[in-house]
Image (cartoon, rainbow, N blue to C red; front, side, top):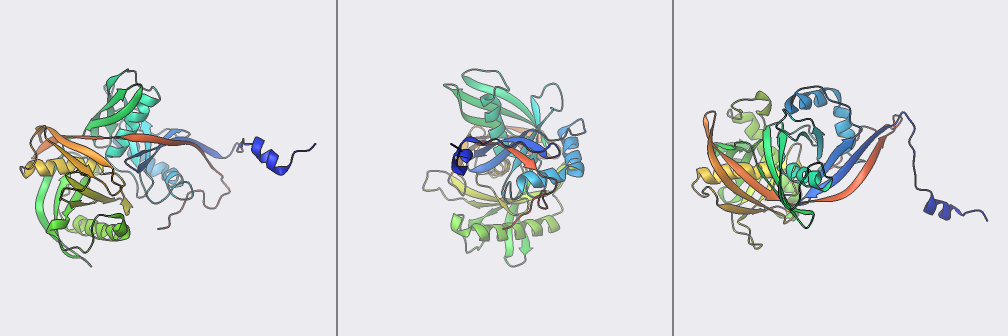
Length: 356
């Protein structure tokens, strides 16, 4: 008896793309709700001798693949990606390139937490119970991560970020449509404008009901600060000298018991679902500068989804002209799926598109 169409579809699941289609294999995770698409196979080999050089080469030669993997229909406006790469030297375990809707960031804490989780789960690194250390080269420098393993599973990851520092406190800028805004400028692997609600007269809070408003205000502030603040300058590397985003802060203690809440608007209007690892790193520098956080003390920071990062200051260091801190940030990540993406050369939308 011939199989019905339904019986055929229940048993025939394999699709073999033609030889001229591009195939890229990924594993997806999330850290506190913030997605990460880790590219494992199929991406072209990049030219360079450091993660910063790989970043430049990827931007120049393969940006269409970033768009194809992160934009619709394979992704969405808030998708985030990571490409593992060779380390900068023999002391590193691997490098990591960060991809988002605007381009390539210099640091991403949620990706560090996720990739350290994946490294243990996929046995990229050897270890048993307890903490497993990893040295990960980001465009901003080397990140030391520690995956905590109990009963064979990763239960959390903490990392020490690059030296993080305050550029200026309580600066002001005129923002079209929003008036005069008070902000702090700090670096935690990327530069952010930190905007406390209590120091500004906004008619919104950091809840999901104001999602669209947060994007509009955050991007307006980012553009104004980037245009008018002359001090967004990394002391050693020109490619790190740009404003990545705006972080809104509600400094009140939250009902969840967290010390405060923040929402990061970064790249081209992406909204971070987690508390933002590099953003928390910069916040640790700000709180330490204000005398609100001593070395070894902790803060628990909540995100727009209710996920939580723990932040602290490990030590104080000199970094060029700045008195900086080495911040520690801790969170958890979870695997959500595996994918083999294909790119049909005849598909008119093969490089993706975005709608908001």
